[in-house]
Amino acid sequence: MKIATNMIEHSSQARIDIDTIPRVWNPAYNNQLTIFSNIDDFQIEDGSQATPVSLKSDGFLTDFEDTDGGFMDVTNPPPQSGVGWEHGSLFGSSVINSNCASGADCWGTNIYDDNYTDDNGAQAFDLRMNSPEMFVSPQLKTHTAHFASWHNLESFGTSGTNPQTRYTDCAYVEIRSSLIAGQYDPLSSVGFDYYSNRYYEL
Image (cartoon, rainbow, N blue to C red; front, side, top):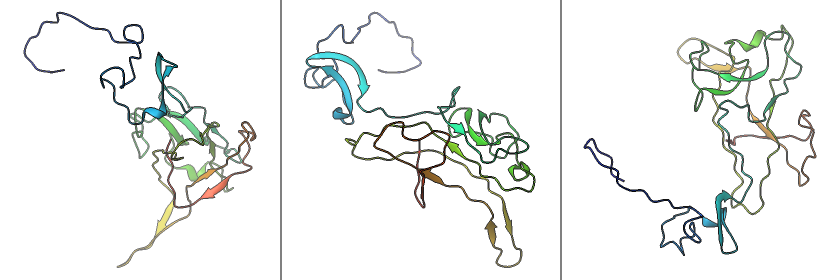
């Protein structure tokens, strides 16, 4: 395809799909018209019949646009004022980070409040959020989750020639796994293990 500012005339079109060419997605049968990063990751045929292209694994991907992705706030205890984790749009908001990693919607802790430390008076609380259950196929070569995050944690510092900053809060990811689907209550915090110095994305 060439894109230019000169006028062109559209004279014809050709449709290519599973109804027009046998084994349409298979490079061995379509003169290498399709290229896959790894063809074994995709379902393209049922026997010798072409099917719509789909991933073999039940992967999980969301950018949280217009959906919470099945994630849920499990802040403990629930704060006296404000909220814990919430899903919404940061576009044009007054909080310090005014944009999500992609699009306008994302999850955040008390997303429209720039000071979360006073949400439960003088009492401590944990801002927690659980993701939905995700199936990870043992046939995958890697088992890595990816997510984009931005942190603004409470801190205090010293002045002088060599100032030091100390953070009174932290942020981390915990994971629990089971060979049995549905083993864990999605609202429960039981069974999680802490993973330090590792990064995960969704």
